[in-house]
Length: 486
Image (cartoon, rainbow, N blue to C red; front, side, top):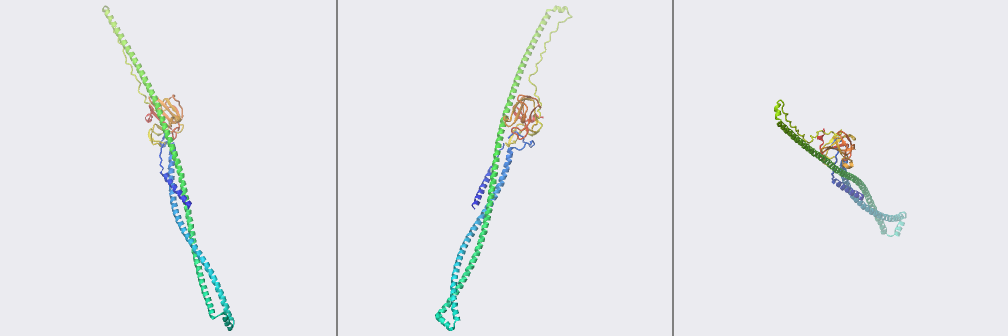
């Protein structure tokens, strides 16, 4: 019974543990620039696996809790049955003890009565022997001898007394025999009752043992259920720990990648600013050169006008100085005045409109995630995806979407989640960037042409499978690549 109580106490503690487990709630979701569409075939993430395991553990906890509750109910029923059987067994044992005492007293009384009856029977036998001897002597002797014997034996009253004594002794013996027979019958009845009580007590004891066995089995089942609950609780705790660790790691990767993206934006914005500054300086220099050329052309035109005026004045003076010559040679006229030089306007300054040439798709792959807000593949909710994810087999060639200068090349340790990362500056503030490469085939400062091989598709950094994360940045800020692609 003490072991059963210990098992029941352990089962109750196990049930409390199950209720504590079911009260636990957790939800942390971690992020990355990886394919979120099912067409990417990039597999499940560690956090998703942890979430699935957590669901399995929760279901196992519910099953174990149900089993423990059933075992506890069975244990309670067995405990009540055992208590009832124990009370019944104790009652039967007390009754058996009382009957045994009564039987012992009856046996003692029977022995004493038997002893008294035996003593009385011996006395009766002795008296009967003496009487038979006296009667035999009377009948075997002559009448005279009989009378003599009676005379010798005493008076007739004494003989009558002796006969009465024999009759009384016989009656007493008969009564003792009846009492002894009654005592035998009572003892037999008590023995039979004792046997029945013993059988009943044995049956009750067997029932108690069976109920105790059932209670022990129920207690063992409760202990096993508690052990299963403890195992499931440990598994769930480990799953939650792994889930939180993965969430923290994913959040750190996301924050690192965000910081790297901001550094890349700052770098490309600085390059764009430098390009704009250089372009503005070139425009100012061209304007100054155009102004100087305009001044030179204006001065040359003024000098030509002055020279023409001077030549016209000299011609007029020559005409006035030779009037007679003109009149004496009427067939020859004066030379016509020189025409003023033609002054042309300088061409307008400034560059022409920028080229509208489109980018080209950098790999032969499948669009698995576009630009904009989406459900983060690492469970950090809806977040902005600053580019396009193009799913392709590992090692697929990556070509430059546009020509330009390689402005940035970073390793996974430097890019903060982008893995092997490359950015090409086309100029005028436009850049194209390529992330998660398995290999980078260009260097910073290298000039590349549109369509030139620059790397290979991979899954480095915060990625869930082989793909290319492609970005278009204007002045360092990511924009939707779709309008720039054919």
